[in-house]
Length: 327
Length: 278
Image (cartoon, rainbow over the protein chains, first blue to last red):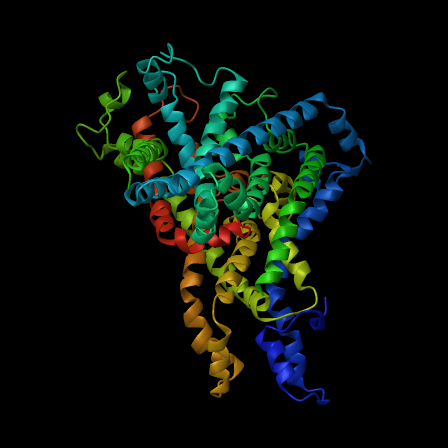
């Protein structure tokens, strides 16, 4: 990208056009000015290259090596070609975990976006007192550190005298006295979903609500005067305006939920984690780090990063485009 | 308002209140449980409010081994990470907000792309590389690791704050004879200060909350962070000290909750434009 392609806007560009164009001597000041943005981003680029770029390069190499505890101490692995990849791709557990993670992600994203959007719409209908109260409650939930939230979930769902069992029994939903929520994989993952959705909804609500409040009143009124029903107004006026933000939030949620680790890892607990309840992040941790088979773990990491990279294309492109509009 | 409209408004309000109760309940339950007596916690019928509030669980939690180590380590890691990141990120943010340059788009893709990387996918490369340079089980290893996540986020959010400053102000200062540097220190810096504070606080929260890398990279109990301390609280025994656990949870959550309430409104736009989850 060259400067001439972009319509002026920055102070620098404005300056350049104001001054009469004439060849100026090759001065130190001019060199410094041209180099300024690069000098400014240099520290960040160096840190990221060293602490992220180099490990990622190393990861790619590791994935073609036998690299266990012995090699970690000896500091070099033995090349094994594509063996790690073929071992992973021929492992039916990997495919089971992949399918489970996809189903889990779809369920979590659908619930988060669905419930989040509904609450945002509700916020436009309630009185201002309730709106302030509900927003405060959402921000409170949003602010909870995930590790802390897990502990509260463990306490509320404990088998002996958990609040969840008590409440469900009292409400006559069924007999949940001493019900063990950690008995089946489905139940464990459902609890994890409830925790993730609870933690993710506030962000969705606040953002969608901000988008909804940008829907111009005149537009809604005009549609109403034209005789449009509430549903038509929603479909033809509201939806087109919040659609971009909705898509961005959905794609962010997909990326986040696919790579989730802390919540399932701590809620299901390491003692209960096995191949029937592992999600991709945990599978990778168990196979690579716990079993100290770093080579194979690296192959799984690469596969996971590739999947997320594909999922991120939409979001990153969208962000770069908006950033070009902003300046 | 017609009767019918008032009635529907009432229904929406009732649903809204019910949702408020459900959503904020876990936070309330954590704090309430932390103050309850042992018999209220262990009884089969829960009490909705602590009948005889006690501080003993807080005392127990603080007296548990490694609590203060965890808090101290977290504070060291957080303050160094945030301080270093803010300086470096601010420079890069100026480049993005005030200059057009070749490679700018590439840099933006890098900044946003990094934030999309799943942390679990980076456990192995970071562990292996940091082990090679003897940075495993060292706070410095965790600090540099956190910087890779805090930096991109901070660059992006600070860029937003810088763009929010009217160009006229800066140009006016230059017309008045200020140098570029003068206009920077006297005009730009004071204007962007609230943004810097908000970004720092948010970086503080992300770093304080982090779990995976702290868990993987710090093995010694005396080196671990507050969140890792909390995650080991339940241990393997069946008889969990729920009161102590909730008191410990409250202690770790309170600074985050307070800070978050302060900056949430300021930072929300940064979140939509690509960032880490709160």
